[in-house]
Amino acid sequence: MEKTGCVVVGGGPAGMMLGLLLARAGVQVTVLEKHNDFFRDFRGDTVHASTIRLIDELGLGEEFRRLPQSRLSNVAFPVPGGPPVTMGNFDALPPPYNYVAMMPQWDFLNFLADAAAQEPSFSLRMGHKATSLVRNGGRVTGVRYRTADGATGDLGADVVVATDGRHSALRAAAGLAPKEYPVPFDTWWFRLPRLVSERGEIAGIVPAFGRGEALLALNRTDYFQMGYLAPKGTDARIRAEGVEGFRRRIAGLRPDLSDRVDAIASLEDLHWLDVRLDRLRHWHINGLLCIGDAAHAMSPAGGVGINLAIQDAVAAADCLAPALLRGRVSRGDLAKVERRRRTPTVVVQTVQRVMHRLLFEPIMTGTRAGAPAVLLFVARHLPAVGKVVPRFVAFGPRPEHAPGFARRAPQRR
Image (cartoon, rainbow, N blue to C red):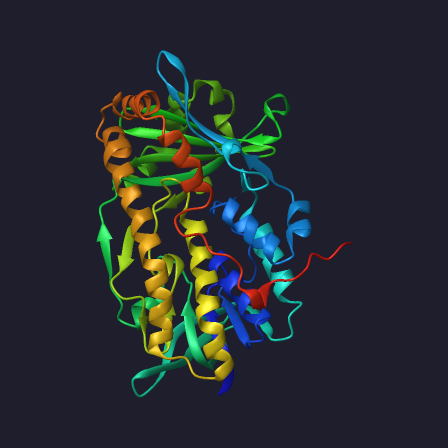
């Protein structure tokens, strides 16, 4: 059986960042990604300020800023009968980390892959799906995988890190069961055209609230990325209404966009996200560590899940690299990662649960004025929230810095 130092299963933001960092420490690391490329629409497309700072610490800031992107500088919510309520202004944060970058996630992942490919100890295997764990006695010693053309194989490792998302196959294979928290909504993602006259350099998020439904519009360069929110369990009913029924729903929430709802050609254009909020009681067993959504599935509320996963990856690299270079990773090393990242996870998920209860449940249960009323009250009577929210979204609790072994001076080109 072929062997490497660390197998990272899942080529999302956490997996690619972990692979890059470990490779810069000189660790032999292999990332397995089940798809043949990174091109999948309607993933989270945010790169938060703490991640941008991390990229600068890695000496990759110049290349990152050359990628096509827009900047999210604030979040404003419309309130019936009044001007929009701004809940957070990122411009108030110290520059240059006073914004959240918006870019297609495949661009970001390719950027990380290109940087990692410069390290001789890094390997990325696309079209390789990890199907089960390889064990020796009571320890995980690798993974079994299947390639896109049907070939199978085993890859041994000193440690396996699962970054394969909320439906993690490795988490299930390890017998790790998460504690689930109630979520009042699911999300359907789709695109609508953005007219030239509507385009601008600054990205923004524009929500609209209805009775039992809501709609988010994320301003992208030449289109709106739309997120339709409705109560859990309504996917079958929405699809039974057909594409015309869905178009009417969108036009009712955003009459100003009714002239382009025909761009939703069929229900195949809708990408359903089964929203979950859960957390593992234990993130590891002997030889296996779960991070990111594999350890704690996040709600899209607040848009902070990607940032949290990347911070997990940084902490994991910092804690595991010395042990991997010694050739022996103990359960204590894995527990150290979990201890460091559990508190930030609990804080973020607690905030999301509060948002679900105060903001999203009133919408989903049909209390039309509930959500705007909460937002208006917070904006008028709790001004400190406007200072806390930008920091919380842009950096999150306990943001991580690049380990010393991964830092490089910027390369001028």
